[in-house]
Image 1 (cartoon, rainbow, N blue to C red):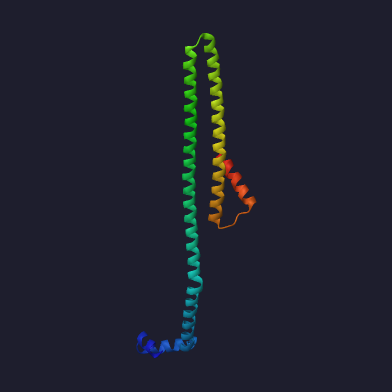
Image 2: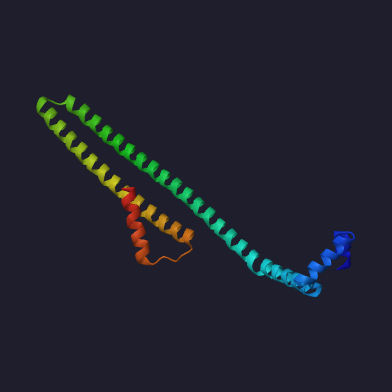
Length: 181
């Protein structure tokens, strides 16, 4: 205590500092025990509170990154599905156009009566091809909606870390299908 008083002031200032310490009841042993207690509490908080909280925050950051990666994967799969749909549709249209062209060529070679009959058949083929194309489109779209719904439910359960009930999954799937439609 004397060292602090010597460093703090000279002469009369020293007496003033001693009087202030005595008046306010400064006790070196009490001060030292409080410093030690504070150090122990700080170490315990460091070990048992601060580090676990940092670990939880890191886990959450990783889950969020996984969720973003899954969302990107879903986006890629959706783009691939759309591309497959476009390929199937263009293939069906090409086949339908090919059928129409063949029907028109055969119709021009026949007599007027056969020509009328061939054109009617070609129109029926076109209607059937369009119908088949629409059925294929609807099938691919339904498959795409189911897949997107499944991927959204999977991603949601991974991002939230919650096991979803069948009702939750159905609700999320219906909501996703409604937005995709």
